[in-house]
Image (cartoon, rainbow, N blue to C red):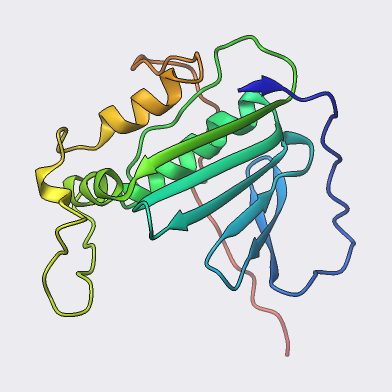
Length: 184
């Protein structure tokens, strides 16, 4: 992890979508997601930075790289990652570093650990063609069945620490919604 000298640019909400690009809404505003033909994906969070994901079949790993990302953006990325690998029930990661700059960050996770994390959370992970898990993906035999040690090790290698604690998090609660009928 090293500090980026350039700040990210905010997204232009009115800019037309590029080929392969989707517009998503997040709690922090619009996000642009671009999916490549090679299976890679880039999420542009505007003023929070950009994050790219790519699976490498040769090394059986997922490479995540962020450029010009704030620590709040990095925490959001980890929250999304936990949510996706745990079927939506992941824990929220809150930035408590006090770091105000923008950073370049790169993380690598073993696919076996990712599959193990998903299975531990009850997410059905499909088997490869042929019905049996290949020897290169011993997800159930990973050293940590939850896969969490892989994530913790990757984050700690950046000089950061993930620790479980209670924190105040803003939430929007909708108690009631009414729809007024309108004419067609």
